[in-house]
Length: 205
Image (cartoon, rainbow, N blue to C red; front, side):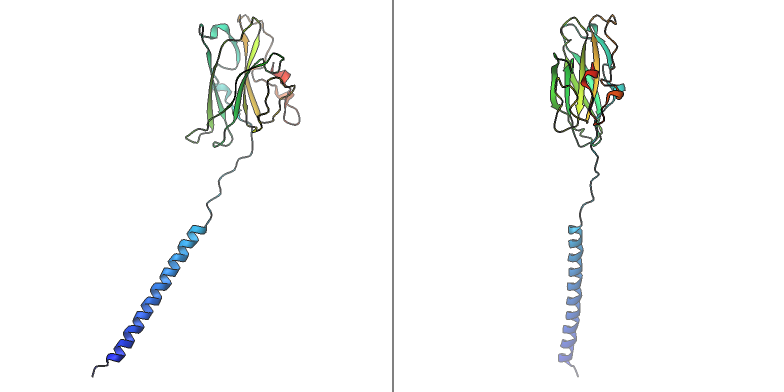
């Protein structure tokens, strides 16, 4: 004899178990997704503040003496300065001065912001061009890479105003006869760096 009522109860019981199992699985799945959503992203690397480093061996023309014959007739001389930064995502401010630190100092370029390497490299290449310095005497051309966001480099300070500046310099000898005084192409001798990280700008001459 058939028992339709009993069969119906068994069917409903099986359906209830199946429904409960499916619901539990869905809840577990949602919980897993929620865990994925709330997990924080990995921390990005941090870099301590540091002065940009000029790749002196790759600077063009090389730091040191330049003469009138280095300039193309009636044109500007092109300079290339590769600068290494501590954090590839950051930029720096750069300047070019003539006779930096003297009363007649003049700004030739800047302040200008560098551009971060699109490939994430740590080297940023700076290009600039200048006319030959005016006047018969020996003169200097100084490039500064400045990582200080306050941009405190100025034309005629008694001392450099930031501890995150790196210079490179050229001595312009118009005659090429070697009559200019001895000159440190690095700009500022290490011995003249002051305890607070600044330096005597007079030593950049």
